[in-house]
Amino acid sequence: MEKRIGVVAIIVEDKNKVQDVNNLLSEYAEMIVGRMGIPYKEKGLSIISIIIDGTTDDIGGLTGKLGRITGVTVKSALTKK
Image (cartoon, rainbow, N blue to C red):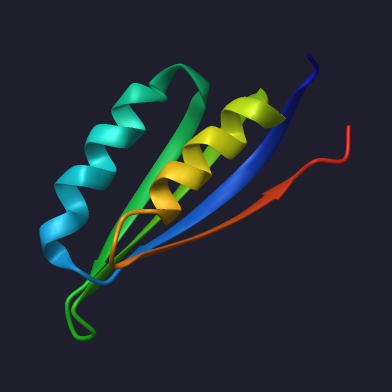
């Protein structure tokens, strides 16, 4: 299967779920090219953006699992080819 490059935006509104997100990202570490995390203390949330390089199945698996964590919102954008 062909690999694609993309970006995933993760907003964590429940501070108690940050560790769950980090654990999941560690499971998919082989396809993460880069990561930036910003704690937005004034709003009480964290924003994480990751650059990924993987198959659509692997990327979908990661974003699907992230989206099932309560208090977490996920959006992704991938290259067309």
